[in-house]
Image (cartoon, rainbow, N blue to C red; front, side, top):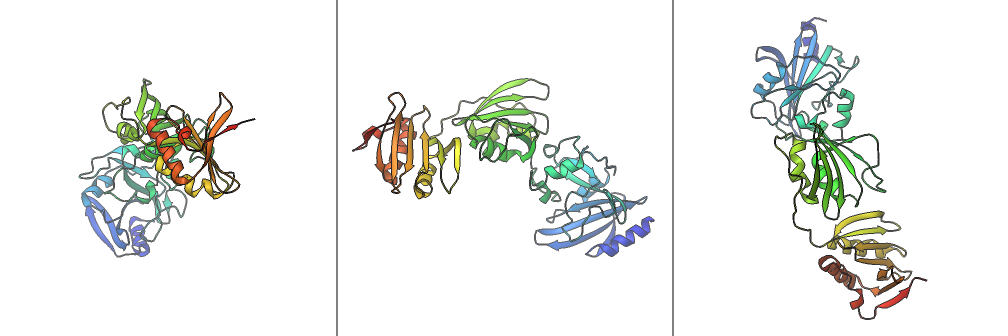
Length: 388
């Protein structure tokens, strides 16, 4: 097909009115449609039988950004090979030329292949998208990239056509130890995550002693595990240098986020911090509300809520709460639906405890967290129970 025939077909197939324009010396076809999330503008450049497509959603189209993206050589390699660009007033700093359209055309059509990868019914077609260096792994295949930005990975695919968006830094991660019932499974392969989620929710809230290996797009490797209220492990730089990591778990993203955002400067990897107040580690098992066989950390309020809403629902359900220095209180729902609370003493093979109300249990858990001790002996009517 000639360029004129391809242009005529594009005009025929697009859902909106198509106009001709010149952007930075490039003759292009432009159409804009209104969508609930904002206007979607699509730019087609037809040259020598090939089609280059730009798409800007959420009303983010800007001619100066389009000019820069159109200047990128339209050569799709099948792998992620970014081109450094300066996009005025935009947070994104790389352009990718893709043979497979990274997102369904939100204007109503589809830009992906009707005649094979990188080839539409109008002839060979590539899409140029704007990204941030923190979002891409150089050298991976386009197929891997599309999987990484899908809803099963970083979710970037839903925002990729928004030129005004904030970057979505990516972390490739794998679990090195078993985490029964957890959000990750032990694996030899790395899986893409939003870096912020990995360092604010997954790694800080994981079970004690379970290691996760996390890689930035710049080549840094973190091996982290939670030890009480801290994240500890090692950071390996792209040049092979390794430093220890020992940070308050809620500061992992603040301290290590620059690595994943692609920002310059050395990260802070060791900080004393302030111990978290009113938290306990717990293990639990219920008949109908899940279980945790490895120690996880929760606030005292969440621990009490778990007792009230889950443990006492079904006879046989139990929870074990541990303080920073390993003082222990354990609670079980009895056959009568009561809460039996006790502190075990392995040295004597005995336990001290009695049936308690939720309010009494809450008071004992507060002492366990704040004073790092069990106060079961102070309960009026506490009994000694032999294990034999």
